[in-house]
Image (cartoon, rainbow, N blue to C red):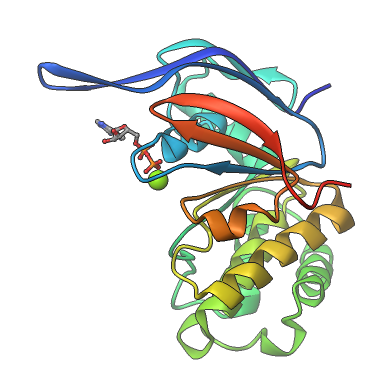
Length: 231
Ligand code: ADP
Ligand code: MG
C-alpha cells in the first residue's frame, strides 16, 4: 500500500478578494521506503503540497491519505496526534532549540510525543547520533556546530519516534552545494537503514538528481520522472 496517495488534490488560498490556486488538482502516489523529491521554482506549490502531506494545512478539495489513513478531514487535534505518531519534519533553517544540547534536541520528541523510559530513550538517541555521524557532538549546543551538522541533528530528530515518513521542505536551501549533497546522501542512507520514506523539496536542480523519484511542480501542476540514482 502506498504511504501517500493523492487524488485530484486542490489547494486554494483566499487572500481578501483574490483566490490563489496553489495546487490545481494533482494525483500521485508515493511508495513506502522511497526517496522522493518535489522540485519547482519559488511559488510553484512545494511547501503547500508538503504541508498538506504533513497534516499542517488541510486540502481545499480532493482526497489525501498518508500512512494508510484518510487525512482529508482531520480536525486540529487529530492532525496533531497524527503528526506525532507518523511524521518527522526537517526544516530549511534547522529549527534546533538553542538552549538544548545536540543530544537533548534529538531526545525532545521522545519526551513530548512518546513517554519512553529514560534508558530506552537514551539508547535511541545514541543510535541516531551514531547513524548521522554525530556521536562525539552530543554535548555541544547548536551555536557550536556548523549548518551541515545542525541539519544532521535535525534528520536524527525527525527519526526518533520511528516515523513512517520524513518531510523535508528545502532542507538544503541554507547549505553550500557540497554540504547540501552530503545531507541528501545522509537522508538516503537513513532511508536504507530505517526504511523510512523521505520526501524532500528543493528549487535547486543540482540536488534533484540524487532522488529516485522526482515530481516537478509547475503552476500547481505535477509531472513525474525517475532520478538518475534509481536502480
Ligand atoms: P513554494 O514552496 O514552491 O515556494 P508555496 O507552496 O509556498 O510555493 O506557494 C505556492 C503559491 O501559493 C504561491 O503563489 C504563494 O504565493 C501562494 N501561497 C502560499 N501560502 C499562502 C497563504 N498562506 N496565503 C495566500 N497565498 C499563499
Ligand atoms: Mg516553499
